Length: 491
Image (cartoon, rainbow, N blue to C red):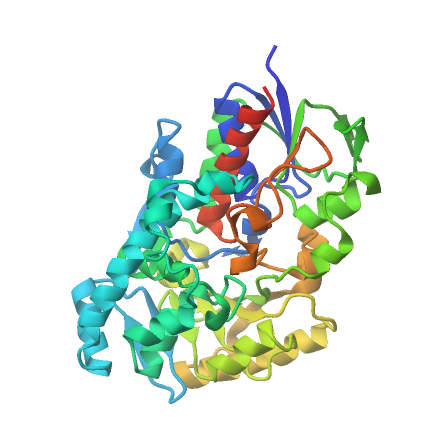
């Protein structure tokens, strides 16, 4: 008889773990509190509009392809991909827009037009970033983080200085570029990793490689197409899903998880994989004596940002708007410090807009536009009220209208906000975080919360609060890593 594993949560990490465990011959049951798979990557459908509720950037297409390839499938079996060109637009403080071309030679020309000779530095920067991407995404992230001996690896040992683990991203970028715009452009991909560029290891210039060389893509039907694909694959592998089944407790006897309790009944299994919020499982589901980490441990963790999100549908089409737009029209440093240093609601926030209907007409009714607004904010803030959300929405709408030269306020027919209290209520997110644990040097590899419980021998974890870290591709990898570790250590 096959061994049985229960996975709590069906986000990208949970879906990935489910597929790999089923492939390994296990009986797999997934318990999900919502009425659909996806976790933070759920979709919202309102009056003909379809919004991706969470992730909206499709980077690292090789990671998605690798995932499906391991099951004899390919991405094209499930959804079509389109590379966006331009990749995205940036509005600067003087109000001028800059479109970032997908074509590398065109990008080099753009760099030289801003800072003569900078294209040669871009070549050098990306050559180094390519090495980091190869070692980081194809090797480092697959380490389970259970022992330092995992990192006794020739590529890692011989290339430790090339990985720039002990240099900050800010210093690394400054060595290559002088112009403030180019510096901010190259620092932008690490904004959501959980620290300012001066506190983020330059290893993460691999994100620039993912951006510039890997490209920015869009899956037909939106990011939820990935969820649908992984769910379909899991079903084909025999995985059973129980939706609207929140877990209320885990019963542990003699250091072994015996059963999972839900409002719909009790479930038993040989192994449990927690794909829900790690802190929530520890704090709310396990008996006190079986927690691996203390309250003090969690309160001293550095979190990646939270988010103020707005899902907006308007009854008009916009002109000259791209799929992705970054509004860097206010000081970058001030907002960053308010997220990571002073921990307060932003004075003048940077923000981002995704207009999926520019690329995908199916995401909005005919003649309408689908807009997703995101303001990164510090995790753990108080006073998440409708009044505060409205205040920030008014701020960014005014700036959006000013920069695009088009009015949208009076054309809004769908509006929904989603912020810290929603992340807590909907996802049990620690401190209402949106992206998980920050990728700082002291929270890397073995210094992250362990994928294996220190107190419960058959309890494992996956997702953005453990190995390898935040983001969609890392979460998919996390599911593979935990499945391999379960199979290696349990039986």
